[in-house]
Image 1 (cartoon, rainbow, N blue to C red):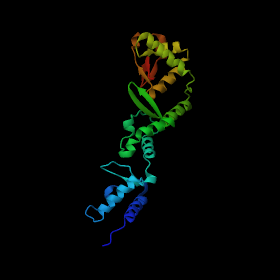
Image 2: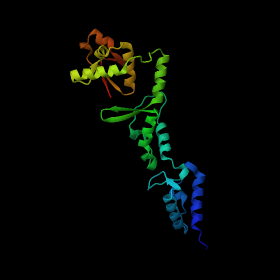
Image 3: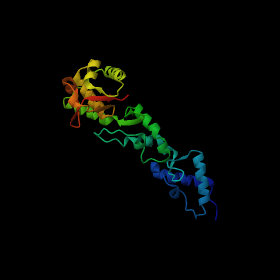
Image 4: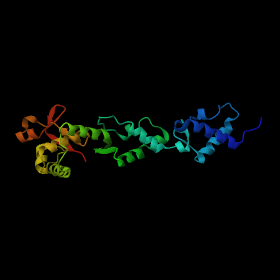
Length: 241
């Protein structure tokens, strides 16, 4: 039997991958059966196509998924995987591991770059909590802010920088991470209602940690400054950088 030309073997592999597009094919689906006399030539052609970057592997070395190079877009696929995690009207903090869950191979390796790109595009918000880094989708956050405005909440008219400076001063003086909201408002020199709205919104995205404090020891000013979270008044807050 006449042996098939090397170029023809390569062309057949490329044609099979062209048909399936971005879905790609596993090695068992792409190559002839291991018992086939054509297997060795196909293996060699596959290696050559990979080395010449005419095809790419979106899977792993153990579980490959081959695509033609025009569909080899691990970064684009990683971005799609991450963005698919967004849940409308829900503010959820994700770790980078959670954002990349379900990915393998080249797509998994591209997750950190995809997250950085989405942060740059303002589709994700990076939040540091202690030594841990979390990510929040900005679309649900915008939806929540618009909903609050429609319900009559103020559009947060306060000097955030003044609030953060006041917080750092109070923490430096007391040595404690939690400060009374009433003292924070007084030191920052901002109106109380906008401050309470801002603290609630920041708490929802994980940038502020409220604490109930001791209501029995609080005075009238401290109680008026308390923010209600989950049906309970909170007198103290911790601001996370």
